[in-house]
Length: 620
Image (cartoon, rainbow, N blue to C red; front, top):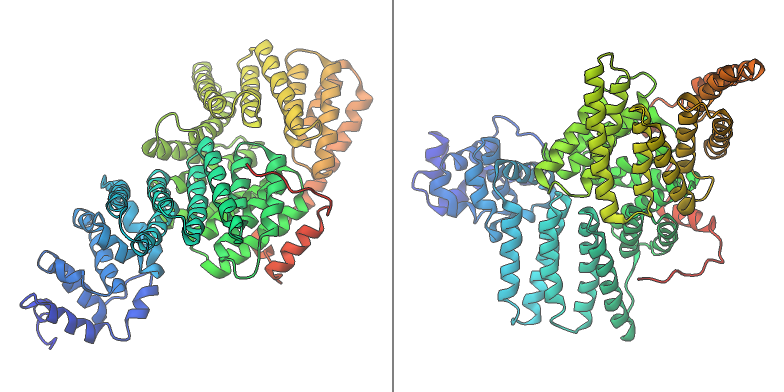
């Protein structure tokens, strides 16, 4: 049959039966293989058949849609590889076609490639699909419950894909349409679906920084759970409490986030989806980090990394999610070098899955930018950090409005880097230009934070502290002092007097008094306070101690206390030796659960470490 041209053999008359014969001969025994291969295997009958179909796409388009979903997807992926994005967009913008493509779940990473390429090409496939689904839901509002249930289930898949791909606004529209269908019936099943829908809706609103709407979603979920409780039904709340923890964490309500992470951990049971377990462990770990419960955080995030790697694979976006949180833990326990390596791995995964102009890639760039900035702070080599900060901003501004809250942190990171570059610059004009650009970025970040969180918030306080440092570099010392004091006051009230964030601001104010305002007594008191907090939280080898020690050496030189100068030179030498021995692990990932515990063991170990006398917090 295939002695002549493959194209003529497969599509001599462009009949459906000819297509079917080819697949019978070419795809039998190949179908499963094709579903898991990342690369096209050259010179195989299956690939020859795929190429033949693509060559005659315009004549065979209708026949292609009758193929099994895995084979149909391979045809579309070939269109993508050949750069035929207009034709691919025409297919993916049809809801029925995309619904079938989504069923090829083992090719999801390849689907992300295609989808992102279409979005980059200007084909607004995400919004087209979301609008089409919304219209369909309005059409079936009067249909029977079975039809609505089928639509809701598809909406969860479609919205889940859009959420995973980073198109939160379109995913939100899909989940809102699902929620509307759920509320048309009062049956127990629809209450269950409504709770599940609220969890998904809360996730995308968290991701899109719509925190006020997230709170409304939480209250709605509680109302549906109350209805179920009246009928004697209970739902597992692990996912909901995990999203609540994420919401509170984002708003810097760290005490509440920590309390709810405990409740989420209590809800982890056998049979929960691995994705839910991984996400709860991630959120709980982050809550532990900001509460400086580092041992608990380490156990939780390492198990999350292990689970994600074993269940989803080392090239999956969910694995990259856990790596970003592992990098966050490492950065906060002062293992800066390893955090940079972990963030780079996470970015590599996200770029390989999503490509360039994607919000998930942007957040990974930002995390890597900041960790690189911290890592290279002493060396002054900020080229790599600046590249990633600018890349993050470029992507976010391409996708989102210019006043989106996600820009606040990216602009802040770039401003920090520009300030350090300006300080090391030997050209006065260039220095002033860089400092002014940093100033504009910091002010923009501050305004975004105040609009989202208000004045009395840790994020707002951080921006005040950053402005304080910048004003010091700009030799505006009174303005710098004012910003530092404001940052310290807010942080102390929210976090306590011995928190890491407080120590940072105290150290910065000490530096201002020491180097520029000659207020040596105040500077000495603040340096010693910053050192005490750093040692208490991180130990004698904490990296931030270097700047406090050097500041004290300069201070004691200035006041002529040479005995103290000698003392702190010795302290600094001992610190350097300690740093050389610290964090000798060559690869942080090698340290992740080489002898893994069972999930229930990790959960129980965490809960046993908590007081049994905690009252349950009040939801809503």
